[in-house]
Length: 137
Image 1 (spheres, rainbow, N blue to C red):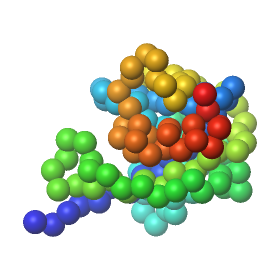
Image 2 (cartoon, rainbow, N blue to C red):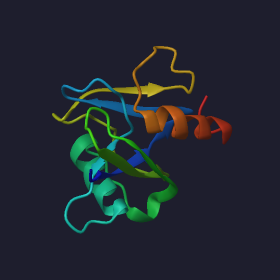
Image 3 (cartoon, rainbow, N blue to C red):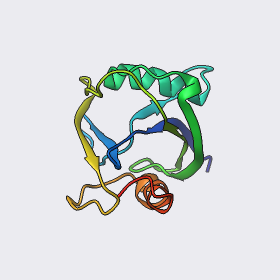
């Protein structure tokens, strides 16, 4: 059986040693801001576009630092893998404000004291590495 791939870009936005996560309308899991690449977009272009659309913040490609590329099974989609390019957003203009696509945003610590359901790539790969790098509490 053929495996399908979903390609997304995600941004790590940190303020006061906390990570910004969002939950889209009707979804159960919190993930970092970002979204699917469209057409022939490269990962950085997709992330800049998504941050503007979802959070009304301006980011330049040169303010994105590559953090890593990750892969996992796509939740609720049989024979589908999620490929995610993750970038640290070093600078942005504006206050992250959720759009109509985004139901809720939170600034979290690595310990996730509220027990939010986090996307697996962020829970198992990204957040532990950010904590190890001493970028979040």
